[in-house]
Image 1 (cartoon, rainbow, N blue to C red):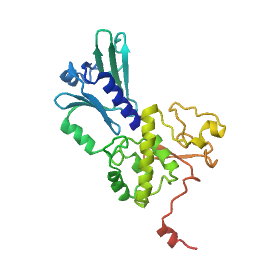
Image 2 (image 1 turned 30 degrees about the vertical axis):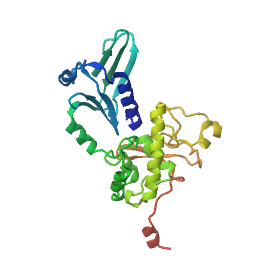
Image 3 (image 1 turned 180 degrees about the vertical axis):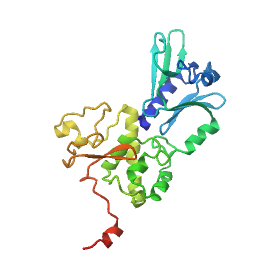
Image 4 (image 1 turned 90 degrees about the vertical axis):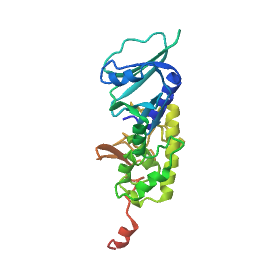
Length: 287
């Protein structure tokens, strides 16, 4: 599933390509045809992301709300000589054209594609946790939910009502970088630990927006520094634990482990991310 940095890159690309232009909107597949007709031929105001949600704004406070889900793609093609016929199951197509310039964008496979009002857009945002890529994000809102929950921190980080935009890669990598046991209850985390994780996440995700990939490995653990081959994976980027099960940890050499947690594969190093035991349990343990 695309993570938050992908949605922010997409919002920027849509705004740069179509913002302020009159666009034609259609639904070659037909499932979005009625809603597309309501904004067809209007100016696209701009696009923004909130966590894993994308909102494309049109006049009169109408928004196309998109959630890509596991299989969605929203591909933007700018500066083409002509707009080709739609191929496959295109749910939504945007087209803009000047005399010698054309652009189009095709949405396929999305979980959500709907035309919503300002109030409906705001309701989606209200259900979402703070997004590390937004300047108005407040990490204290996420902290309030984390500190009151006994759920594993690895599960809480994937809960979009706690933090908006974190996916499986950022979740696993953030926990490793801060040596946090993925199964540690949220309410045992210290405020300072959470703030350090949030600050790190902001930097990592901003890098993801800039480069279009997720790189979480520090300079001393990069391939050229360690004399190891670069990672080969369709997700790209240099990582510590994500999808590296059975491979040696870049830091300690312990084999990376994986287990399913809440329906998603979790990756961690059992040595670098030692099992958490609360002081209360330690004090009552038998000598």
